[in-house]
Image (cartoon, rainbow, N blue to C red):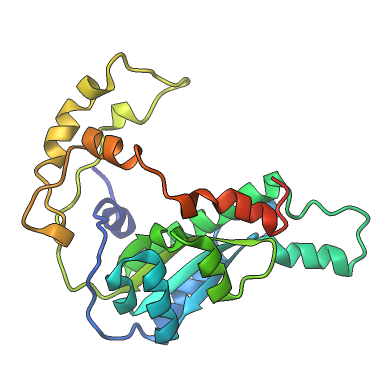
Length: 249
């Protein structure tokens, strides 16, 4: 198979949750931020921003939200934000007769802009030998995070990424087979998903997560059942909170 360094890096992706406690040089950080800034953006409207957390006290407060202690040890922590405030201000300053900077369509664009930007940073970081992990858990208490980051109206946090030089070598986690996830021309519905995913379930049960290295992980179908049978009340308020913050959704 013909590949290159970047593709090999992407195919070798694994979450890193333990980093060497040495700083990433400002030159490299600058490269990652330039990559973020060059990311594709819907309609060219640049509806995402990054909060770079350099204050350790603030990191420690974010740990209380995420409930993941290793977040505090990430040499770099970027929080990606759907940012419709900037364009809203541009319209207001220009006395625009109409303003759809924060309608449902633009809100979704801000979310996708943020996610694409985050993945670009991850790809770039890993190609430079850095280890990364996503922190969706920063949304455990979105209201508290918004206050901590002093986010203005018409902005919402989306995802965080921890970055540093890896100090662990986790297994490559199995992924679902392509034929179960990639379809041609139309969506394919399977008669029995447990049967269809049986082989993947078995492969996943051979994987050891370094967060609990003494036991194998559960099958995918069991994880789906366990995780999607519960709901976080604070995370469930995300869209209501977005409405409070000026989004017309």
